Amino acid sequence: MSPPFRILALSGGIGGAKLALGLDRVLPPGALSVLANTGDDFVHLGLHVSPDVDTLLYTLAGLDDPVKGWGRREETWTFMAALKALGGEDWFLLGDGDLATHVERSRLLAQGLTLSEITERFRARLGIASAILPMSDDPVRTRVKTREEGWLDFQPYFVGRRCEPAVEALDFAGAAEARMAPAVAAALADPALAAIVLCPSNPYLSIDPILAVPGIRAALARRRVPVVAVSPIIAGQAVKGPTAKMMRELGLEPGAATVAAHYAGLVDILVVDEADAGVAVPEGMAVHAAPTLMRSLDDRTALARVVLALAGRPA
Ligand code: FO1
Image (cartoon, rainbow, N blue to C red; front, side, top):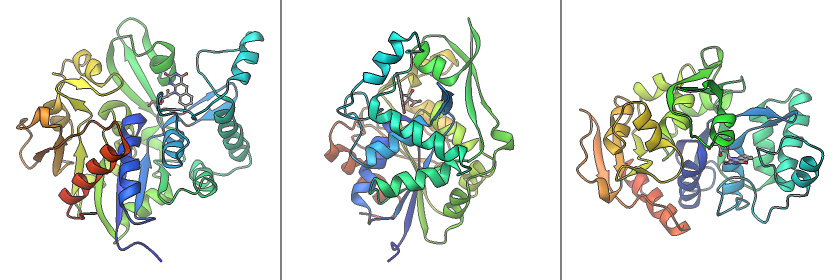
């Protein structure tokens, strides 16, 4: 029995996955599709790693590490210890359980399955009701232009250098040639689509790569359904990750107002934390203050209910 309406949520990183979980929990089974960033993907040790897809799979399956936010809970590290002993690359941590995901995804990719088909297979195996839709089955790779070290690939910047180098510009290599994954095009064209949500992800590193896939930004701009975004910045501070630091490095004021300006023309309502109530937003955008810091599952579902009510679909 198909759900009465559908919600499409754009997400990348750990903050986005938190709201995706809240939406998953409050919506009818199958009503939620999460459009996942794949710009963080890379081949490491010969394995295709899709961090933002895996963070969503693990989070919605209750397998995520509640402290790190990425990788699996109750993880063991035998593989990494053995790899290190052999002199292998140990800067990017692959837990023993997480390793199975990368090995199986790489095996299926080599057999010719698409990233979308593989994600759908994993979703079903993990008993997740919501759809997880990689933005494209073509390679899109976020690259960071740093002041001191020039262009860095994403994971060497984010993990290898712990986001320390100052960022001057971003590039999403391959985006111009990338095609929306078929399921993404179908979700955007679905007559049952009732709203689009921009989860509280890093606008530059998680949302912009998704919007860079031809057709996605245009679909939001000409939208026929409400688009509700949640600011990932609270009182000028990122909840997690380099968002505020990047804003400063890009010459922008770290804060919800900068998030609002970044989303001008794409978003009908921006949800900001109560600490940012009354923030200035562009013409045509409304702002709504609510608690946006998500520590518990209740926080996640409460914020999801706020977002859905604003989108005209109270859950
Ligand atoms: N983040 C880290 O800070 N250190 C890691 O060693 C690391 C390993 C890792 C392995 C699998 C995975 O799916 C994610 C992993 N992450 C790690 C997080 C990842 O770099 C980020 O979640 C995204 O790329 C950006 O949100």
